[in-house]
Length: 484
Ligand code: URP
Ligand code: ZN
Ligand code: ZN
Image (cartoon, rainbow, N blue to C red; front, side, top):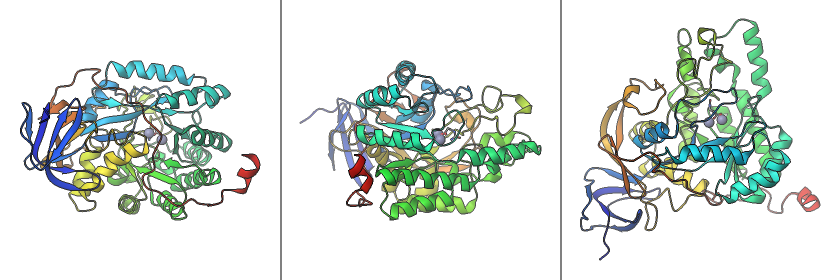
């Protein structure tokens, strides 16, 4: 009989396909046995009354990243991965962000060096492409894709990051040729700039005007345009951090037509609204992200999108900025909504919030929860089946949840370095108690066991579809036969 380094017994094993009572045997960092009953190994975890699920994969988080306005995230690769692990994650995919003038190769070298000595769970990188020079397009991106960074994010907004439509066409076309997936931040830059200028001219500086300037039409227009670009080329895209009913409907309609459009949403669009931003003084800055939280109709539309397949991914978009001059308030009490760092923290609470309010309230099932927080991320970003599932041969990346644990959220109990949480004071039910990454017990009963740098860089393969969709134009577009 095979020796196991670790056994997990008597729990309910949950995958994206099913939930069943069973035992797991782990050896050499991988799952090597799944059976109704296994002998206990020397290290044995009794998971009676617990859910044994694949570790979460947070495929949208900003870690130790310099923003386009020069503000550094509050979390480095240590605090972010510790916080992620306490929230049930075993892998994160943050960004290696190119600013204009930077070489992508140098950017990746820099992020890799910083992550290597600090991360406590596994990680990979998406690239942010803001300067698609000939060298970047012809040499650096193909090289980095071959090194396992098979996805990149492009922006349609932010003056210093945005690409124009021609550049988007070029980047999508390259992604298709080289086997990568393009993630799109879809907001119309000029609409936002135009509204913001007029608001500021009239003296409207408070955080709540951030929401006013990021009108839902700006998001919907950009989503529509990104989808059109994707359809023209017949190249898949993924629209990230979808906030509202308008964009969700546009994405759903395109999917119904057979377009290869995938979408992601985040906790802030289920649990916050514009009213949270409307606080006295500058406090609303703690709830400001782009796109911003909307209204209750949008929250309902986002929940509906999670159950009807509009959204394949539920990520945190953890963008950690402290409520001080190092982050949210670069000009102290004079900071206007246009100068605040954008983003909210959420790497630790992403899964507990969805578990409590999604599974606990009967909106989604356990397998849907696993798909939305882990399996689909692995499939979409080329990590499957090594990660994102519990199967023989998969990495032993496991989170053991107590579905009945009641937790009152307060920032002081979290492990990030942000200093606040937008979800302060809420009580949720369900929490991951034990987290295992490649067979290593990263944490148990609130104690971290993993050392700095024990997480590994995981090169990724080609992005895989979540499900087959019919080709939008079976014969291909006419221009393709003419220009290749
Ligand atoms: O406001 C946000 N989402 N900040 C993070 C950067 C981004 O665009 O995802
Ligand atoms: Zn974005
Ligand atoms: Zn983001």
